[in-house]
Figure 1 (cartoon, helix red, strand yellow):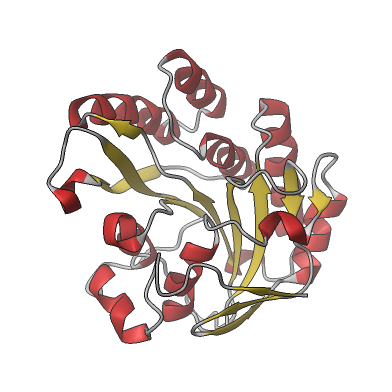
Figure 2 (spheres, one colour):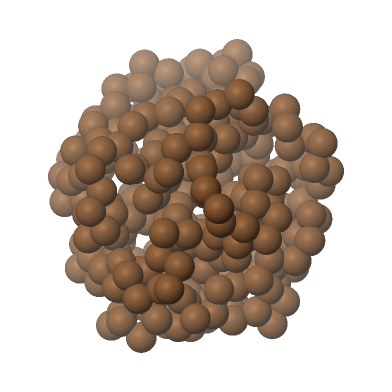
Length: 269
């Protein structure tokens, strides 16, 4: 199956040269286990996501694999879905799904279902791919979408990803990406306060704490489940530290700080 791009030219640019304005081409590269990136239209969140992708290093690897985990905003399909075969057709070329790793993850999860339809109209993973293709034209992906944010679901999938990666012959060539925007449509002051509470839990590798503070403070970040999943994976894979690379809000683009959306970019090493 070939999944067609649905956001090209609107949420992100079609041309490779237009991607560069969102990147930090002088950034120091680092080997990372996972990252957290926003998924709004690039005019708002592209600088944050670009700062993260600009730091990712893959020494001596020409065909890395990105396991992409994002929220299912559309409600289509299964509440925990993986697309295990096929390609995604993007303006910079087709991206193949890493089917061996996808099947290994699916086999080790009690929750995930193979459901391409769940990904057909969802933007949260698609907007990551042009960044990936810019730096790694031969990269492959494993797309996972969630609307079931129970901790048991996040832990099941997170550990299944870790098992699948550990069995992958090229385990050191896999990066996990959680896709999320942060607080939605609150004042700059409120967004910064709430988002800091969530970011602190991420930096502490605390998925339970993250989901707890999201509930307690009514934080409207849309990808808390994908982040919790990635934290479970990263802990299983021996992650030692996390770092906030950049935090901005939509107000930094629009100049309107009365009702902003927050964007955070982090790496996990």
